[in-house]
Length: 302
Image 1 (cartoon, rainbow, N blue to C red):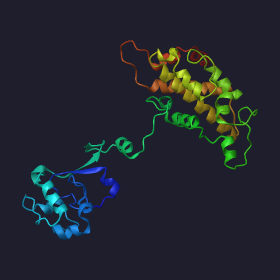
Image 2: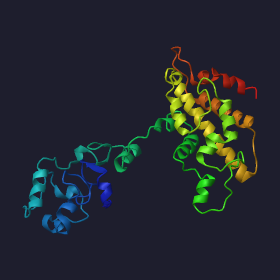
Image 3: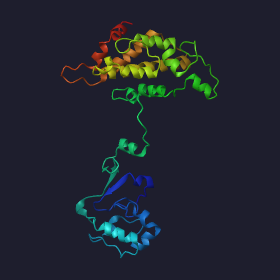
Image 4: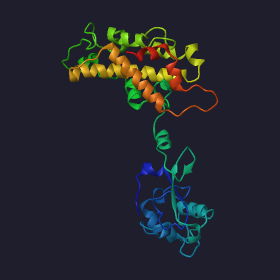
């Protein structure tokens, strides 16, 4: 019989069938939990059931057959078994269930449910939907998430770790590289943001906090799908700025502001084109919504 680690017992239950594959001692097949944890090492002697026995050993003739109770634990077990049907071939094979909630178990394993159970939940941050949403591009979301947390290895962080690197920003060479400078106050980054200024955001944002404020503008909240297009655009710009920064450092190559803007525009069109079309009720698609912005038509001629 397979002996599961104690933490796995909390995640699994056994659905009683013929009980030929369920361990009498180590699987969780009664409300008492794994019986080895109830009886300890003396359990095999008290119940006269070997340590490697399956549950069907306790019901050889279709009835629960245990020796007279000689302890409180054995008496409790007999009471519990009196409420359970003995194993039988007509009930089919045993099955194992995975925890799907606080008090529910399902025959299918869910990584999401398991993660929600074993993790320590924390309050949702205000910007969670700005980073994680259904239409996201995973690598864009990851870089945006790291940028929001100020966890990207910018030069100010590398210097704080004791590394000998030049502090100057590789995009503008005018100031020290920090998260706020790299993505918002750098003249190169500001020029990229300015390319996309329009009905979505009137002026380039000054920090990630102002990006979150843009999401709450009436022109965004009042139009269906505008929030999704804006979130994709914000992440595409942040990702492209970070990518250009790395190219300049590690590949010794650089692109112009116009070239970066064209890359952002192309990635937006490709992603929005890959999304399912809207229902035939007159709803404007996200791609059409993006095309309705003045900047998208302007960029197509760069």
